[in-house]
Structure formats: structure tokens, C-alpha cells
Length: 114
Length: 110
Image: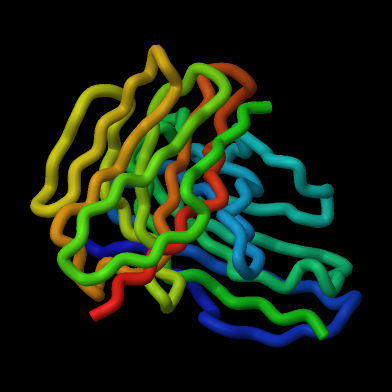
């Protein structure tokens, strides 16, 4: 059984650029959720995808968008990067539409915006 | 929206000591999970515990859903227990989302 993998592990961007982060879900899981964790804070829910549809969203602007693919892997896209977007981005997979099942997290992608 | 509060925010223990971490939530939830985040940022699921009590080795957790709180017990703490402990809930209303508390930062001294 493979776990959740995220790429890239680290990246540096400049303000105004766009970034794409990727996540492969654990085998058998059909739901993926994304979180932003700023330094010293708890993870903040960005959105959740179930069977290729977004079915839950937190308080993030539209420049945060995502996709889920037929194999349940997922992408997080952030446009027009701002300095405050610097954070650890975490992906989690689970089974079931609600996402209210055991979450398995990847190791995260650490984004620095200069 | 639902509020999730964890206490204490910081905790320093001598190796071998016991501790209790608390998570309060302001509304009904479908489930509650406890996680440990290691110094490298990896979140490990400790318990999936919408209600009742579970034990796993030196760790145990109790959730009293009707009173909207959960407790995580760590017994005979070890230096490897250091890190940040988070509780996360799925609200019963308000759509599909997972809300984390701010965490308890634990440091266990040798």
C-alpha cells in the first residue's frame, strides 16, 4: 500500500508568479483535501475533491484552485502569488464523500514567495 | 463557523512524565482526529475518535461528543513524543471541511 506523495518538496517563487503543487493519494482513497500551514499555526483547510469534483471549500480566494484526476491524484494551483502565501502545503487523502474518515497526509510542499 | 480550541498551547515535560492535552469544539461534529506533527512537518494520524475511548500503547484518547471535548493522554513520555499535537474535526453542518485547532507544542526533556 503506497502512502500519500507530494511534489515538489521545496520551491521558491517570486510575487505575482503561479505555482502548481501535486499530490498522489493513497491507494483505495477517492477523496483529496488540501491545507495551508503557516509557520507556527495549525493547518487551514483550502478545499476538498471527491471523484473529480470540489465538494468543500475553506476561506481562500479564487486564485487558489485545484483539480482531481480519474486516478484520484490532485493538483493545487495558486495564481498571482503573494508574500503571505509562503507556507507548508499539505495534501491528505481519505475515502468517502464527506472526507470525515481517517486522513492520511503527505510530507508537504514548502513554498517560499519572495 | 466551528471553533476548535486546544490547551495548553505549550507544554514542557521531563521524560517519564504523564500529560493530558485537551480539545474543545463549539458545535456538533461528525468525527474527531488527533495528529502528531514531527519536526520535519509530517502529520501522523494517532486516533480517529468521534466518541468513546481508544488506546494505542502509551497513548489514549477520549471524546465526549455531547460535551464537545476530547482528551489525549500521553503516559511515560519519551523524547520522541516531542512535536505538535493537533486535533481536527469535521463539522456536522456547514459542508464538507476539516477544521484544525492551533495545536499543543510538546517538548520532552531527557
